[in-house]
Length: 55
Image (cartoon, rainbow, N blue to C red; front, side, top):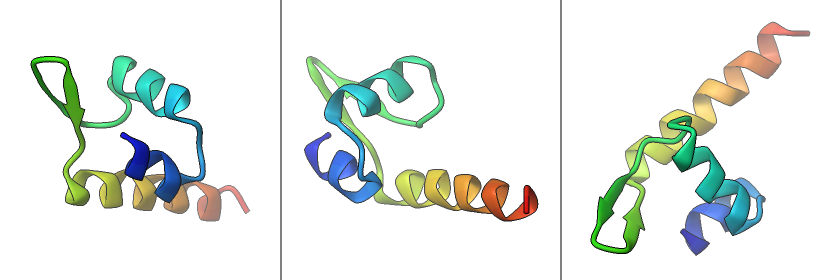
């Protein structure tokens, strides 16, 4: 979670909220939330593409 927050430039609370809202794919193992690097990259690319289309 910490690494994802750092890569996105967001707080951990925001990343938790993105996971809770199903906006960011993740897997929960007991009390730990894990985000696959490929899912994080896809999330970033999706957002990047949306910003470019809006120009």
